Each structure stands twice: as C-alpha cells, then as structure tokens.
Length: 395
Image (cartoon, rainbow, N blue to C red; front, top):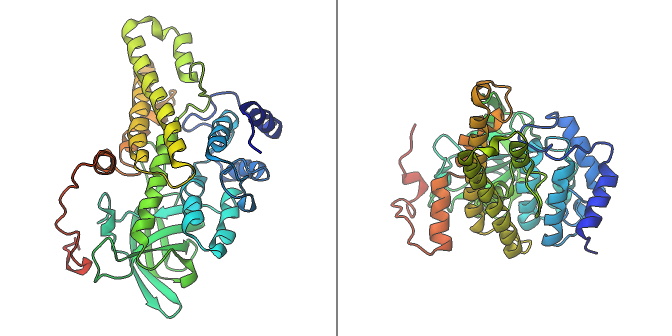
C-alpha cells in the first residue's frame, strides 16, 4: 500500500525521534562520519525498508513504486543524523546493479548486508591509463580452473580503506576491442594480494585510494554478469552514479516543494539579501537548485524504477552547477572569515571543483547528452574496433 507524504513523515518521525536532527543536518560534512554511527542509522531503517524502499522487501526494501520511493528519500533528508557517504556505493550503485544483473545467490548474499550497513562497498573502475577513457582498463583477469587471478592497479577508488567488498572491472580477453573484452567481478577487499593506499585531498579528506592487486584469486561465482559484459555493467553502474549525484541537493536535505531551502533562509535572515547584487546571485543559485529538483523528479518518473537513462548526465551537470553557484556565493558572503578552514561551507567550497570530475567529467556528460539525447554524431574514435592488445599504452 502506498503511503501519503504525511504518513511517511509520521512513521519516520516515530522511528527516528530519538535521533532526529533539525532541518539542514545533511549539509556536506555534517553529522557523524563514524562508520558505526552510520551502520546503526541504517539498522534503524532496514526493518521498515526505508533506506532502499524500491528494493524487494526480502532484501531490505519495501517494494515501493518509484514515486513513493522518491517521497521517502525526501523525507529521510529531514531526519538524517549520520553521514552515509561510506555506504553510498553499495546502496546507490552496487545494489541496483545486483538487482538487475546479479544471480539469485549473489542477491541473497549481498543485498541485505548493503541495506543494513554491515558491509561497505567500493567501486574499482579507474586506472592510471583509464580515466575518462574507462574502456582502456588494463587490469588482467586470467582463468585458472574455477578461479580468476587478478593483477593490476586501480586509482581514485573512494572508500577503499574501509570497504569490505569491491566491484572491479578487469580485462578477460585482450584480443577483443577494448569495450568487448571486459568482465565485472566482486572482490573481497581483505584478500591476500590487495594493498590499499590512501590519497590525501586538498580538503584534508582521504576518501580516495590507490588499490594494488597482485595475484588475487576470486571464484567464478564472484563474476557479475556474463563473460565479456563488463563494459555494459560499467555503463549501467556509472548511470546510477550520475543519477545519484544529479539527484542530490548537496545540503538541501530540508528542501520541499514549498518554501525556501535552509541556506537561502539563512542568507535572508543575516541580511545579505538586502544588497540587490547579492540577491540576484542568490536567486540564480536558487533557480538552478529548483530546476534541478524538478528535472530530477521528471527523470525519476521517466525511469519508472528501471536503470537511469542518459537524463542522468544532464541531471549531474545541473546539480553540480547549482552546487557550485551556492557554495561559491556562500564563501563570498562570509567575507574575510571565509578564508578560515573552519568557516561555514568551507568543506563544500574545497570539494566543489571535484564535482565536475567525479562520476565522469562535464565534457563526458555533455557528449552523452549530445549523442544519446539530442542524436548528434558520435565523436570519432580511431581505436574503437582495434584489438586491445594492439593499442599503445603507457608503461
């Protein structure tokens, strides 16, 4: 039975009343970043299927229709008291792909543990020679009886230091063109032969890592999808990532269809909007923010619960533009105090440039929109049909 907006808010308030935060608690960096706090929060939600409402109830969801799931996601933003960033890859990327591509055994093994936070996932896609050209991935996976032996390295793997499992794309056939010789695997991050090295970012975080893989063995049961179907699964996973980024309010957890978001109310309350120039910039940020909300709702409706389409690329572009407009204006409004690392919004300001890169660069997103939405000609690619083994690569 579908719930109304009022019923959703009442049930969530009853469930989380002891830990509910005031509106605006979901600004980037707010809440506890402690892994245990996030796990306890997910445990509170999994019984009612609140965190992943569109998933089957047997796997920790509540069999909700897309429209109801969107209402629940909005309501959850009002009560979130823990930082769920560590659990994002599992919930938003791996889970949906497992539902679409995984075997029944794989779904039973991992979906519930993703929903309740008992296992954390990372995404092992990018390599030193495979960034925007992700199909150039060179990590090798060689068959040895019922096992696969993985060798190579990954980079920009977020959550690598504390993940229990990794979703890893590797090359199983170098004689095929680069898009056709890839296969997806699930990898136990505690396996012998895996070394994870954190990469420190300019905002002080160490979310990204390098992962070195040496003779790591996985069974064929850890293969996700068909042999050689790794590129298709990669594209599907990235579509979920872009839709997730595009659907985020990046701090607008209290946003609703009426009223103003907390950040705009705060600027008005502080008197900043008296200045007509500031007011114009603030309204530009709000319009970008609201347009992203509405188009995300439309994309959710179009997807109908299925895999996100190319609309997710447009949503990511809009979301990042809105986030940057608000973040940069907020830093300017802080004046000289904005130069301090503990000033409000500083983490968002330092994070903002990376938003145009993570999940695929802005240029890649525009190509996707141009080719798959507008029907423009594909950019020429001279190596698309060449065997991977014939391609020139850095040593």
